[in-house]
Length: 455
Image (cartoon, rainbow, N blue to C red; front, side):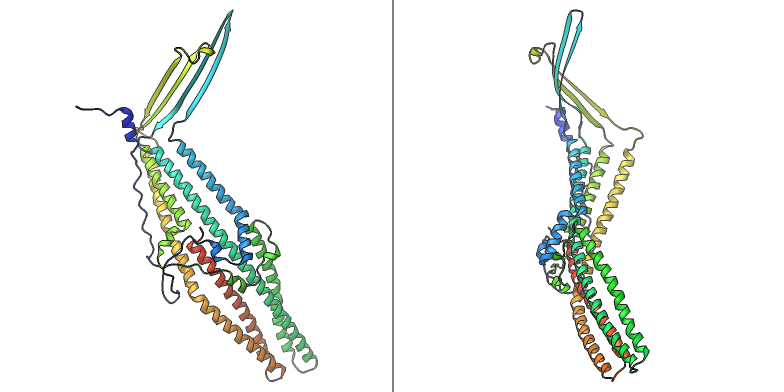
């Protein structure tokens, strides 16, 4: 005996159709392992994604500044607002899969001559509910969900960027404060040397050339002092903008060396798979999944759409008998539509496929960018200690050469030009040492940002 499938059961079975392509994550277009070689230090055997930033930053002043930035930064607030908006859009699209139940009640009153006519009605129903036979609404809902998740990852990426930018701005301020101190110290020493040369020249013991040569270092240091004063002020303005409020002097960095001791190294493993956990990479993947679902919705739009409108209600001429007697009534109005010629369905499908290809390329580019950022940070980490040690030795040698040249000049053994050259070399060595220390701190921050360690 042959049994037919009831129409409602058939509709339920058809709703399982999904026109979206099966999603397959693109293979990462990067090597399986991070680079190794002369520039790279040995990596730890296991990566540690999800490491909170508070584990790496132990400097109490910097931690306070970062916490304030996370609470008040306007860019982060905008990112969180975008998350809320995307969540609301997902809920709107999700609601389209379910019928909207409405309830209505009405009454009418009429009088003609001595006759009074009253009528009352109440009904419950839903209107224009699309039976999602081919998954159009379901794929649109999935696309909205993936877009919402992408926005969430974007907010995480903004949070990580804010932490890194705040730490870098804080380190830059520490470095510029030290550069200002070095410029002022050099200016004071140069002014004393210039005064000495003026005295010797006045006594006929040296020529005017020594005076002019001494003045060159004075003016250079004075120029650097003015520039560094400006830079320190601008650094503080940058921190205030990141934090979203003025930062008091008590929270400013004590020294660059103290700050370096308060920022640890983020551990990085040998595998590049950890790059797939970066928020920007996850954001790109969610966008790709949304585009994949859009293809399913565009394909389903080429098939018939079946809608159903129905209502159940009661009507009576007397309010007291509204829910009694024979006042019950119901209605159902199914409809179907199918595009035959023209329309945007085919164009929308081709557009969706092109968008999917676009997001594949963007996802692969995000993975490649992540790989390069980690590799660059590791290359800097592998050599920065050796550079710092060499700069420290250079600073010691420059200081000793300057002290000896000054002694020889004052004793009349050597010319002032040798002392001047030594002073310039010492000034440059002190500036380079600060720049190298800043590079060390900044690279630790960059490595944290590159592996997206924050939870």
